[in-house]
Image (cartoon, rainbow, N blue to C red):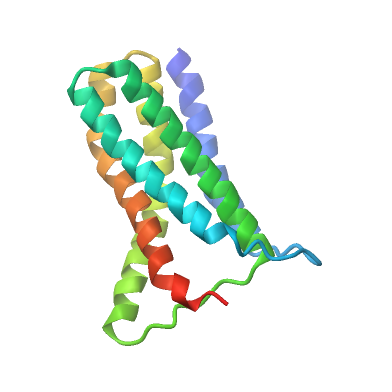
Length: 171
């Protein structure tokens, strides 16, 4: 019964976040100083998230469930902080076009597009994985975590890569 409540919440959040980000991405706050200091901060948060995820897998393999839970909770908080900063930056600043040419531009676009698409997919996966652990359904938690972990790690790492690739072009 409790799982049904969580599933409704997860469904709502998984729809609302991407739609809200897409809508807010197009809104610029007038007469506000651009928050141009944010990209290296939110890229670093993505890096921290990746480290937390790897550490989380290491500690659960060693049997430390409590630390595993704490690391994943912090990773979720980091992802939420990233999202808030990312939206705030784009509501106060114009998007920076990638200035590379040739094959590197296609590599960048591939990484960016897969990062964006998987960042949408990962929302319900993370929430379902977390919910199953919180409800004590560890066999199902472990099953979905095997999918969630590599995708979330990919999103976190490619967030850093996208930043590093585009950072030379920030004005």
